[in-house]
Amino acid sequence: KNQVEQSPQSLIILEGKNCTLQCNYTVSPFSNLRWYKQDTGRGPVSLTIMTFSENTKSNGRYTATLDADTKQSSLHITASQLSDSASYICVVSAKGGSYIPTFGRGTSLIVHP
Amino acid sequence: GAGVSQSPSNKVTEKGKDVELRCDPISGHTALYWYRQSLGQGLEFLIYFQGNSAPDKSGLPSDRFSAERTGGSVSTLTIQRTQQEDSAVYLCASSLDGSRGEQYFGPGTRLTVT
Image 1 (tube, each protein chain N blue to C red):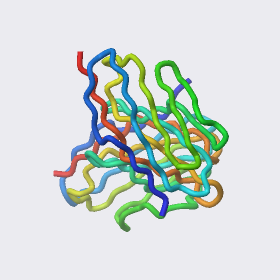
Image 2: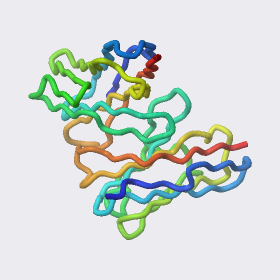
Image 3: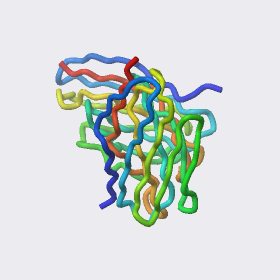
Image 4: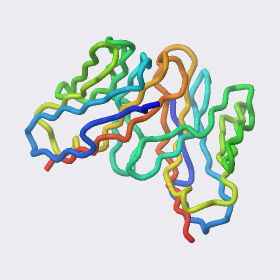
């Protein structure tokens, strides 16, 4: 069964600090992995996408890494801002078969001033 | 350009009533998805449309749930005889061609069944 596990479930950090969110998956065969940001009361918005051959991708202060061998990904946020407070969702798609990706439950990040 | 829009943004209904939720996808996107997000839970897939047909309805939780899409554009999700456990945020997403490309999400409809 395809699964995506995220950790931690929630995280509180001070403004300006860095943090790293983790994603482990069992989706196979692997097609791509996306990180989404979901602000409260809004729909998720894609931050990065990574395919099998990519092991790092940056989008401003967000850097995603992928280890396809261990089936792990991380999202690193540098110099956090209050606006980074949101839920971060890891989403993994498989090749062939269903077009429906597998969603993690998300990590809730709160950035305090 | 315009993103995915959903209406209403909030809906409060009494147990046993029927509700209709609407999704307007991005123009030109052939694939449309409905998801449900309960408090503290991940997104739960409900149904996927490619054009007007629904090749995957596997996520619909019961026969009280149905959805249709007309003209390859607007979609409505109907919940009949609502129950309290139907309370959740219902998210719609569209993508260009139903491949494994990016899904663009709407803001969701928050449904509360009293």
